[in-house]
Amino acid sequence: MKYGKPPLSIDQQIVLLLSRGMIVADRARAARYLSNISYFRLRGYWIPFEVPEPAGADHRFQPGTTFNDVLDLYVFDRKFRLLILEAIERIEVSFRAHFANELGIRYGSHFYLDAAHFFRNDIHRQLLESLEQEVARSKEPFIEHYRATYTKPELPPIWAVSEVMSFGQLSHWYKNLKKRGDRQTLARVYNLDEAILQSFMHHLTHVRNITAHHGRLWNRRLTITMSQPRQPKELALMFNTRRDRYIANTVIMLGYLLKLISPGTTWPERLRHLIEDATRIDPVAMGFATDWRELPLWRR
Image (cartoon, rainbow, N blue to C red; front, side, top):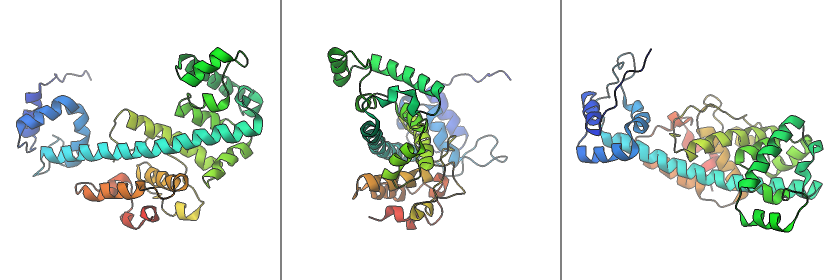
């Protein structure tokens, strides 16, 4: 079917929302937000307020739905994404540090150049080519210092290159380590099995990409999931096995890791307050169980 919907002006967008039953008390304010956020982006936040199909096939809104309700949901998701990004940053930096330090001490400063340490030579070659490109583009002072000072090896040591490789690349370097013992050395830092850490880091690159592009996160159905841990038991019991494609299990794992990396962190407490203060939010839509407030995650 050929697409035939015409573009609408901001005023026409407001008229369309009104015709579908949304209450817009301040049209000038709504026009400002539609101009700076866009109708298409906000659309994902008013879907929960639509009358369920088939009765709502014309996308009418539930009685009493206001533009402010939609905007409140959008603002909540923005604050939620920033908290998720804060946690990812702490965990990513920690993982980079341990990858470089643990393996650098064990095998030497440039071990990553040797394909013998990796499971598949073709993947190692691809990762190395991508890393060479990252280093060539980098303007980091420590990279430029290495280029100006040393001639061999051509690439800097692991503790330098691990700072310029993307998080996705880092995840693949870890996954491709040949020895399970090497993967397990890093996983033990976080009291996890290497398969669980490997799966979570891959999943986290997906979540990180969503947050980096300011995508809706709070009730998104995630396309890349993670394996659920069996140990430690207190972590495994917090997971909602029936809602593994939503963000709640990610939140639980992030909180668990943050408590290990930074004991005394206030991140879980701040996240819980954000959810509790958002009266329009249903935590079940985020993937939490109905007794989410009882999770040990929230305890200091």
